[in-house]
Image (cartoon, rainbow, N blue to C red; front, side, top):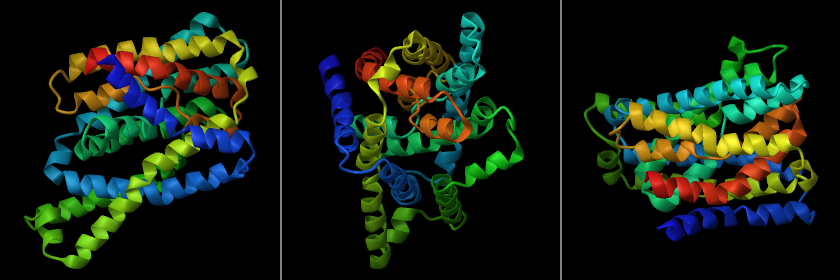
Length: 318
């Protein structure tokens, strides 16, 4: 069983290697990664969201799954509290380093990596469930996360404009479509089935969305290609990696098992709980003056070590 889980996770990580090589060998400039991110965020991922949600759920089923974003938000909150305790115990003098550690322990890789793993293990409904759960993580990033990494301004109401990003707008639009269908007592399948144009349109959107996973993992690999191995030397990086992959998931798993013992998508919550550090924290660190050496180091180490820890967690949890 471990071997099967390991190879499922390993093949996901294999998709990162081309991006890593392209950056390391200077085949493409680092600036290309930003352009790639824009395409993913503005085109591929919204298409995947719309296709997955409208094909998999009704609005009533979505409303019944409110626990998904709530659980992920609380899981991030657990990471934040443990991060405060970590900083309080080790008492790092550098405030930038303390903030960066706290950010890394608060937010993990809650979207593209678990999405690829779930796509390997489960069906499209589970992918849609993960997408729905990201609402909780996005709320954390643009409230608690912003207050951590940008303490001069902290959290303010303007941060919430990021809840109008293209992926989240796609979620809102999908929910709006499903609500409209519910109002008229119909569903997506019934309407699409009787309209050839809608059938081709739905198929095209789904095909565009399918590019989100491989292209995003290629981009993540490219981001890792910008990280230098000398960034892995500080002991704090390995401490943060240990907490990110072992301690926080342990508390998160106990929380999920205790609060949502029979939820139909408990496995989605558990997969999110055991993910490594968020690659997106690199961008936040660049924008708001985080400790890039620590952030880069923990991203690389946590992803490498998670190649073993993720299958081990899944072996015991799923």
